[in-house]
Amino acid sequence: MLSLDQRAVVQRVFFTWMLIGLVWRAFDHALLMQLEAPVLGDGANDVTFWLAYTLGIPQLLTAHPLLAGMLDVTLLGSALMAIAVPRASFFPRIHCAAALLYFITFTTWSNHHYRPILGLLLAGVAFMFRDPDRFNFTFRALRYYTLFIYTSAGLYKVFRGSWLNQEQMTGIIEGTQLELFLAAPDGWHAQFFTWLLEHQTASWLLFALATVLEVVFIVGYFTRRYDLWLFATAISLHIGFWFTMRFFAFELIVLDLALLPWGRMLRSGGQSAEGAGSTSRDLTQM
Amino acid sequence: MLNAVKALWERTFLREVLKRERWLGVVFGALLLGQCIAQVLRVEITPFFLFGMYSEPIMSEPGYVRVACTVDGEPLTQAQLPRFAGELFFSTLYRYQVLADNDFQDHYAATIADDLAGLPPSVKRLLQDRLSYRTEHAGPFADWTIRYLGQALGRSVSTVQVTRETYRYVDRRPQLVDARIILIAHARSNVEP
Image (cartoon, rainbow over all chains, first blue to last red; front, side):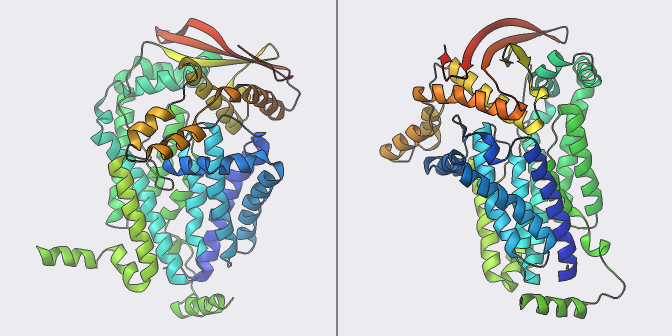
């Protein structure tokens, strides 16, 4: 169980990661004010998005620069304040509400149901609670959810049969790397993809390996002993996805941080359970 | 058997939360139920995350569609834009290309009829009307391509042209099979064709 001092450190780490993700988006013209009031959106098959679009929420938030700017400032400002004032739960709450609106609005207008942005919302949920019990339970729930994301991705591949499909990587590469083959056919990445297309068994083995590594996360439901290994596996998967699919979900990696053994990493010699308890009393009176 | 299930339940995380923080446990239980329903029905209901990550079997296809964009006569690739701007802009162009392929009939009518068959017809009509692309969006959409690229590229943009190209792989290399222009946007809000 994390004490409130440890919680403050973890909050700073999580929100620093999220802030970096948001600043990256700002530099990439992907904040709401920078979208220039888009016209063509798509809620894919997501019922929540349909509801938001029908109610006019994404349209409202991008049609008025002032509103869009306010949401952007709230999103960035709340992440920054969550780092600056790590014992308060007010800023994570504001951040989560703003991140949900941003996720729905940006993803609608990007016409691509890019789910990893959800990491910016989900990772903040545990920090909405100042009470030590509630925080610890929610942080553990976040860990279970992270395990679920990977396990389900692996099990989907098993039950849908894609992991036995020898053409899987060929189909993925041909479909997603067309632009790269045309723009930089002689670059190392295009050469690597060509090699994978020429060696279908090798590319299929990589896909099967990714499936196995994803299914392995099921272990985390039964023991926390291998969490550090699972964290390393998650990071390896993300690196692997970039090499084999040029897909890098920076916003999703923040959830992987929930797999780190924070209690052990932040344990200091003088800290005792009583010490943590007194801190928690002080903080709950804030 | 019942005792074994009960003993197992007593050791679960959810049981522990319910015992110590009842309302939080109820929220977790509701979220778990929602996730299970979303999983079984295979519908997306944010924030219930279905991270398939290429889990459907994907086969090599005879042809692949690409949208090519030129800005003031110069080709613009996704890689030339910042990552998120490129993804947003080109994904939008791909959506426009699919609309153009289907004579600008949006997918929502079919999707609503299939996935939300139980809804009253008036609600279905409202959803379809609000969600679908309409012909009056053509001009504003063309204007948006000019505005967004102007902002992302940091200079004024006069003309954007979008071409639908079809490729097939020959000896592991893509070969152009067919190309046709699907959008020409000018800064003065004209749109062709």
